Amino acid sequence: MKNYIYIIVILFTYSCNQTQPKENINIPKSSLDTNIAINKTEVLELAKKYLIKITPTPKLYSDNEYIFIDNGERTDENESYYNYTIPKTEVIIGDLDGDKNNDAVVNVGKSFGGNYSITEQLIFLNQNGKLILYLHEVNLPELYFESIKGEILYGIVSSENPDENFVSKKAKYQLIEKKLVEIE
Image 1 (cartoon, helix red, strand yellow):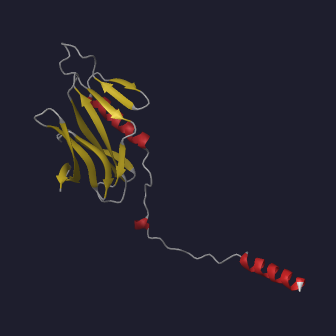
Image 2 (image 1 turned 135 degrees about the vertical axis):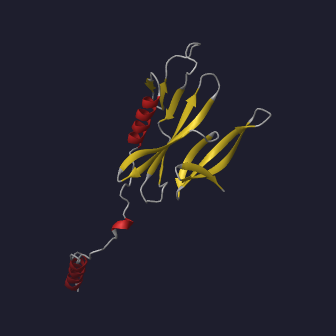
Image 3 (image 1 turned 180 degrees about the vertical axis):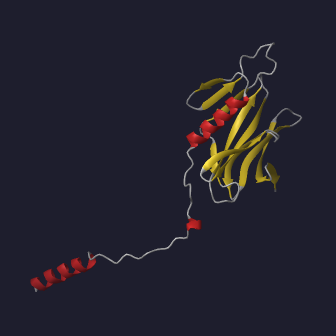
């Protein structure tokens, strides 16, 4: 009886360890994501280079959380002073233009000294695997984007009410004809 049990165990083990024939699976090329991950460091580098290019006499500073670019010292002679602040952790990735490739948005703070600042957005589209600055949006209300889902940018709009308190509301924007348009 023992011998029969050994034979059954050996046959069972052998049958489980046989190599199975491999089946070819055809995956349509159109369903493959051609850029699974955009390098956020690359996006930040592109944003930094662009802002340095458009800033007169740029000075660059950086720490663990932010990249700072300013155009000199804030003085009475330098009335056109401003600086940019780019949060290093706030690169938003997703498909903005419906081509199934990941694009990127960078929220940029622009300060004019004192307490006044605005938020601008740099939008990079993935064209044939290369990120291209598509839009530098400066005409929106005080807006901060948080995510991209289904070609829609989700964010928060802050505004000041007459009591000098800030009021925030959620907002949705879509890229339409080289503009960010608020949608319902």
